[in-house]
Image 1 (cartoon, one colour):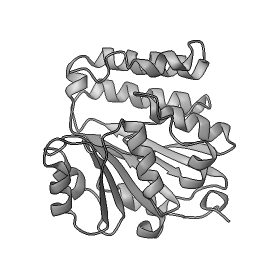
Image 2 (cartoon, helix red, strand yellow):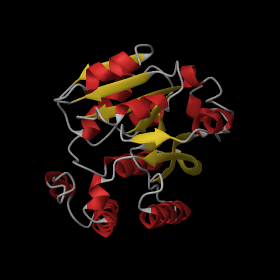
Image 3 (cartoon, helix red, strand yellow):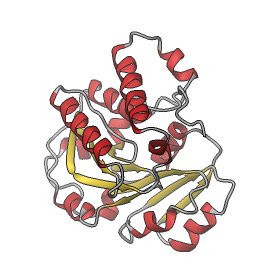
Image 4 (cartoon, helix red, strand yellow):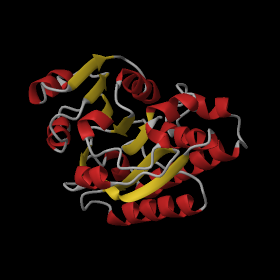
Length: 247
């Protein structure tokens, strides 16, 4: 019987239940705080495309229970590779520019997961920065969840490996929005996907928001709406990120 078929507390033994998966690219300034927010012993897979000392710093700061793979790839490919390297029933996808709230993993340990749950996704705050944006984003997540549309962030989502495999994995051609898109397919594959706002992370890097928080919000909402609705052919949305990764 798989983890997604068992109504219980599957994260009670964190080290045996979940692998943390993170793509990195030139995250030297962010990884110390990120790593410090992880419990010791929980497996970590880092797929790194850096030109700086990020991978060496990760190995130095967290020598145990950590796998670092050098791979020049986009984010969905990095997330997919990390999931394939994981050996636990669940994968916690995140980003190196966040820190987990102090109570995150204790809450995760105590979480009861209903049968046929394929994914859980949590909230994201700004550590005090851009509070209005993060309140609106969180409210949007709750509204989408109430409407039956998963609105996950790749910085804070747990996916059962069996559910990810059943959904066909990440769309490797997407340049962004791969997080919500894969959760939609997990749900369409017959699994429950739940919003768990008490599982929260804090973002520490606000460069994209500094370019315009309204712009970033409209960008995410518009692209996700088009991907969800299928109005625009997927190949068009794959080709161009609409400036999301532009400096």
